[in-house]
Image (cartoon, protein in one colour):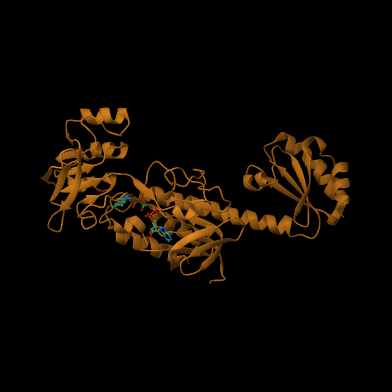
Length: 408
Ligand SMILES: Cc1cc2nc3c(=O)[nH]c(=O)nc-3n(C[C@H](O)[C@H](O)[C@H](O)COP(=O)(O)OP(=O)(O)OC[C@H]3O[C@@H](n4cnc5c(N)ncnc54)[C@H](O)[C@@H]3O)c2cc1C
């Protein structure tokens, strides 16, 4: 077991995790990436990528390798590890892997999501060679070619419409009876009006085949059992995605599909110091660039979290004298008015009591922890414990001096 305490432990080395690692290590935080497979995640499985800004064309593995190298250049460690759980209640958190345990002050979860796999013959073999799960990513490879879409939810129907801008023919295979799709009516209506989409009803795809690349599919009518061969250059499968979040059940808040829920501005989860980025969180667009953006945000917020916690411990919890912690904001008139009374109390008390000011706007987390509902509020701490709370109306030099003296 490693005894090192990292500043940031990143679970999953896809684009989200690798970007977080770059930002964290470049900020001189001790950073470790725990990745169970190949660095780059889904990106590493992509033959070609054409929508990473500034790189007109790259292969997924190439871009993944560069992202890893970039993070390592600034000192991020990378360890092959399959994480099986976390304990995240205190400041120092534990990450449990199959090979060992790791300690870190903050955790960035970037375990990604995977497209739901149909499990039919040929699907795995031709992934990236005609079988795709992402039209935004791969549509332009099918310029003037024929493609088949499997699925009938919003993603399938919207992606089918997008594909008509590129492909010669787009055929959507739908398991339901004619005219019925699971997509929302407005989306379905638009798709039904699109003359470039053909529909095959009551059917599914039972096999995908070809010589090195996709050349045909077998379409099976689920009512009659009849199987028809159909020539095609590509198969887009949109039968949902599955987040890789099972190991966080009972610890991190997730929706009923398993996507982790975060504050979209900070990537903060329901646990202090634990952030979630990329495809495994609830979000609108699951792409490399959005995962990377999340990673940059999370690492920056994690750095702030660590400094705030360490400063608070050093200035308030671990000092030998009583501390008056003034929760205030320089933009609040009432706060500004109360400051002379608070500072007057410190003048009278001398070195026997310490004053620490916390701007509640900048440090909402610590304010919330001590249930600060209005400002100004002064909390008296002694030996690491919050002893007394003095609300605005009760703040006066005399009152603060007498409360502090009672602790001496
Ligand atoms: C075939 C394909 C083509 C695509 N093409 C494009 C494209 O052209 N452009 C684009 O922008 N997007 C594309 N995407 C989408 C893009 O790849 C994803 O949005 C992006 O990779 C998400 O990044 P992430 O870091 O959130 O997760 P992921 O890339 O899914 O990475 C998650 C990583 O976490 C690791 N992990 C999971 N669980 C654990 C665990 N318990 N312990 C340790 N490690 C763990 C996984 O092994 C994985 O490496 C494509 C996706 C696919 C599948």
